[in-house]
Length: 120
Image (cartoon, rainbow, N blue to C red; front, side, top):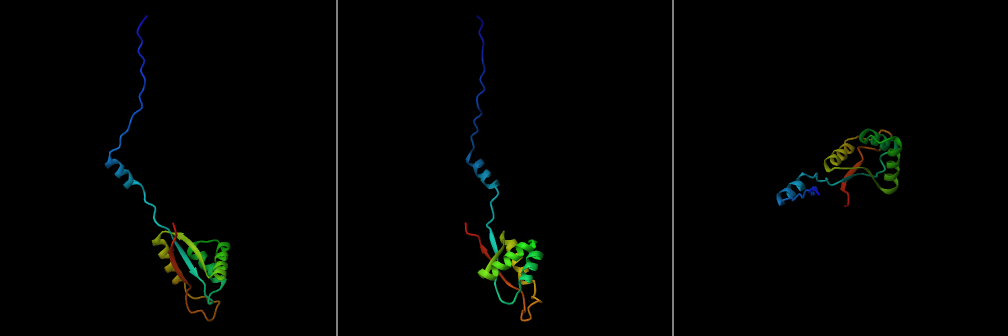
């Protein structure tokens, strides 16, 4: 009888040091907090104004703009977009700069908007 040797592959054991674990945590992308851009109701702006603003500033389709107009009219406010803080601030400022509603004679300026943190 001859001697036969058999080899068995052993699984590789990887040991992470504390420094490697810290580096892995640092390399993971941290998710930025989310913010809602909130449009507030008033009596000086028409549905057509809101729909147009939603289309131009947020690239929402007409149907979505109409739903936002309806929500702001019925509920007093509506969320237009949920995004990062910097982008939300930009969109809020764009709403404030959008101008008056030419369809409403008493309208003197833009609608009001705020940003609110999304609850976690």
